Amino acid sequence: MYSDLNEFNRKPEPFSRYTTDMLWTDPWIAQQMLKVHLDESTDLASRRSQTIDDIVGWFDRKIGLSGKNVCDLGCGPGLYARRMATRGARVIGVDFSAVSLDYARSEAAAHNLDIEYRKADYLIDDLPDEQDVISLIWCDFCTLPPEKRRTLLERVKGMLHPGGTFVFDVSTTQQFEKRREIMTYGRRPMGDFWSPDDHFGFQTTFLYDQDKIALDRYLIVAPERRFEIFNWMQYFDLEMISSEVREAGLVVEEVLDVMTGDPWTPEAGELAVVSRV
Ligand SMILES: C[S@@+](CC[C@H](N)C(=O)[O-])C[C@H]1O[C@@H](n2cnc3c(N)ncnc32)[C@H](O)[C@@H]1O
Image (tube, rainbow, N blue to C red):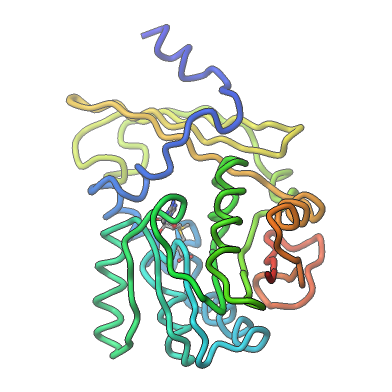
């Protein structure tokens, strides 16, 4: 017990373990995640509807969606894909959560929208090419280790039509300053989220001040099962995100406040990068 807890509270090297897929593809947790996506009282997995309406509104004003081939990477339950299709885009949504894609497909059918949803890992699997617009929304980029971020940017570059646009958002270092190291444990600390069975959950948050990275490390202990989740978050300043984009061969065209589409100011928690090939 002591050595287990000691190991759990050891601060690992940044991004040394990657468990993101489990959060979205474990059949039970993915179902709970879908509920969080659709919960209008929290922005945890997806932003609230009104905010998504506003964001898709400025995408349309800035980039022009009608008649464009748009690929939404990490589309989740299709909340952006559906709105972009409603504005006349030909949308392909890519995600590896079967649960979210089932919901997205049923919503598209219910709204009579012709959206293609593909179950794929955007880091590994074949992706559509000749796209006019690619989106990656809700700071997914920040959860990736540096080499996977580079892989993703290079893949995006290969998917874009000449002159095509890649728009994505990241959390900023201002948000990092609000993070605190914590250590908690409890019985069913998030209700049924981690497991329908009785369980104990431990959480330790580590901060890497120099690198502006946070890790929320979870240990879930149930009678028949025990697992760990590593949730990494890289926070970016303008220079860091711009240079990663440039190094992958894309041109940073604009840096915007993701909520409004207005030019970004350091007070805004997240920034949106509009880049082109
Ligand atoms: C924070 S959610 C955002 C979902 C959606 N963009 C939104 O804002 O409503 C991240 C999504 O990315 C998906 N995802 C994460 N890594 C992925 C990968 N490597 N390949 C495909 N989908 C991935 C997850 O399944 C999840 O649906």
